[in-house]
Image (cartoon, rainbow, N blue to C red):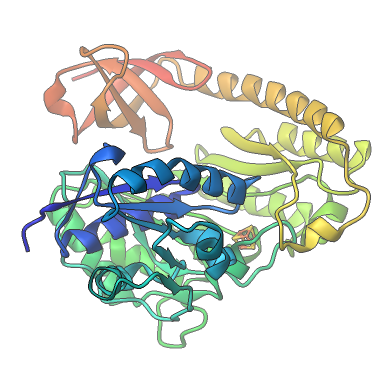
Length: 440
Ligand code: SF4
């Protein structure tokens, strides 16, 4: 069907939500909707929401409040809310926002065309937050624009119930997508020019465990590695408790698998890890890092840290700082703990005052900045393979890309290189990137 109507999607939150928004656009393209960057032109506005971050509900309600004027000017406009906040709030959203037409949950993306039809044909206001524990077949819908990188979901949901996290409640239990569908999707992407694919799941290491005839995650990586024309393969996110020796052995042996792992540790304190229900110890985490570095010594390692979890003492925080010194992560995503409604951690006593948590976070981030800079400077003089992703935002004669270890590199070069790899000599390691010069 020809696209005639305009769709605007506002995406909040994580990479999983960006992937879901991409799927929404593809699914609705088949129903005649073309993406627009201009909300005022849209016939359909979807908010893809996230409840991981603080005050998510308030943000959604205030965004919806701003759409009231648009709906008054254009009564035929359809407004929908999807994602985690929709899953949590359900019919409450429709009750509170009279100009809202649709609420759909995290499993509702592939039913969007039917839901929109119900609104258009029957004039209903629709809520669909049921969990459907299955995956639709791989889409054969072509991407609406050429891409260099793409994400492919390999599983949904999470079984881990970390005490600070809402994901298992809003995305349901773990279910793995059939490997043949994943391979079909990756093959289609690679043949259409996508050079890099990231496999997505909340806990990719437990891929396939609930299905006896499924390949394990490392076996899946081997199958994806064999897809013709694929240059680079990444995955996220890995849970330390499920990371196997078999997975460690894939580094350096699969040609497309990039030499980077994101392995969230969250804290350096065993006591806090138990309170978070993470099910590993700092000793076991360190052993994994050692084994990874034995397998591939220059592997880049990044992580997540939550500072100021309830009851965190100065000694717990010192343990986190000691861990950072010992591992020397390439970079860290670090946050102050804050309550997420509906999670167990909200009921824990002895919350760390925000000022103290912020003080600890600043200490941690200052030290990590120094480590990241030192690691980037250590690459000076060496050569790295860069997949060129775009022209630099600062200058048309500069290109921007990433190394296999996921570091951003800027260098002078021809725009024709976008979408291709180039060898680059590192001239300068900077706080958040590398500056380089192309070599023959
Ligand atoms: S592993 Fe923990 S933090 Fe990650 S999605 Fe599952 S419950 Fe949330």
